[in-house]
Structures are given as C-alpha cells and as structure tokens.
Image 1 (cartoon, rainbow, N blue to C red):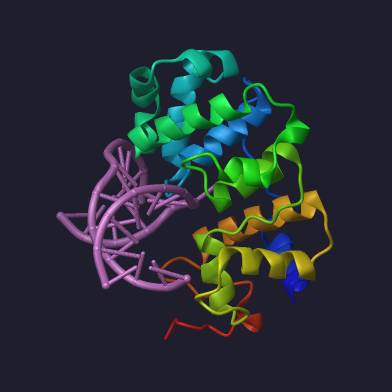
Image 2: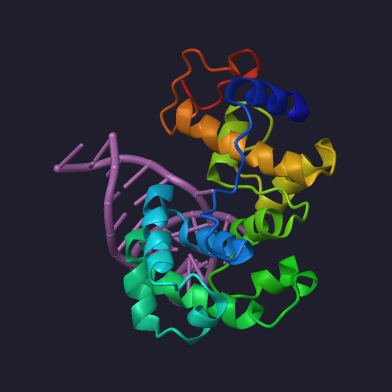
Length: 209
DNA sequence: AGCCAGGCCAAGC
DNA sequence: GCTTGGCATGGC
C-alpha cells in the first residue's frame, strides 16, 4: 500500500526534484540552513531569508561561524522565529563545521539545540544522501486520513513503518516526501479538497466528515 | 482579517 | 511520560 500510494502520487505530480537549492553555495550547508529555517514556516519566507544570506555572501561556513548573532538574526528575519533559528544555526555550524560528513550522525544532530527529528532527518536525507524517511505534519495528516495509521502515532514509529514497507532507496525517500508535501498543499489541506483527489479510491477519509 | 506555514523546546502536570 | 504555550514573519 505504501508503495502503491507513492506510485499514484508520482503519476499525478511527476518528479519533484527536491531539495530546492540555488547552486550558489555549498549544497550541504544550504540544505541544512533551509531545513532549520523552514521549521513551521512557509517556504516562501525561507527563500527570502536564504536570498538575504546569499546576497551578503553569508551562506558560507566561515562567515556563519564568525557572524554576530544580531546580524544573523536580521538576515533571516523573514523566516520568522528568527532569534531562536539564529541560535540554532550557530549551534549547527559550531558543531558540524570541522567534521567530516561521515561523522555526522542522527544522534549528533539531535544533540544540537533547536534541531529535532524532522530537521535532522531532512539534513541526513537531502543533505547527506542517507536513507532516513522524513516525517512531518503533512505525512501524519495524510496517512491518518488514508486510514493507515493512528493520529497519535509517534515520529520514530511512523518512520519505521515507512522504512519497513519501502525498499531502502535514498531517491525514493526523497521523492516520496516531496510528493507528500505537494499533495497536501494541493488536495489534502487542513480543510481538504477531496474533489478530484488522486488518492480518493484508496482513502478512508478519516476525520473529514 | 484571520488563518496558516515542510517544528522545537521548556515548563507544568 | 504527555500536554501546552511561546516563538514571528508574510502570503492568501
């Protein structure tokens, strides 16, 4: 069922080619900073913040390592929660700066204050090409409505369900998460538009009526 | 003009 | 352990 849903979404929306990056900065850094900035935040606002950093040549390990926290705050302000996120970015850069990529584990990322499971897994999957399935609010909403999981399911449990029911494939994990986000923005919104939904025939419509 | 967006943490039961 | 409140901007 999990693979079938993937196939249906892929047929409907095509390849998403995530994670979006500018190509003007270190890709791993840009993905990581984007993952922090997008916590509970619209991607459009994240792009403004990333563009501020890029235009000041601040999307850079050395610059971020040395930048004053007040300046970092002002550059990322459009992304919201900017004081907290500025601290998180500083924590992240200080911790990861001098490490080789193969030293960056999930446990290491989760010890960084301000980085939780979704952010860690996004960095691991999209930034480091490691097979960690990303769970977010969209994923839970969609799969609860489909009737496949309980609404109080825990992050690690749901991640395990996905990883047990899919081949371990980084490209598949990347694409599937991106498709879920697209689908939840298009049809399975907070107030869902079920008309013409490509998953209608396999949906239990839990919580809709 | 309110509601929402690709969470996380600290505090209080 | 689980629930709740705070964090903040900008688009629709």
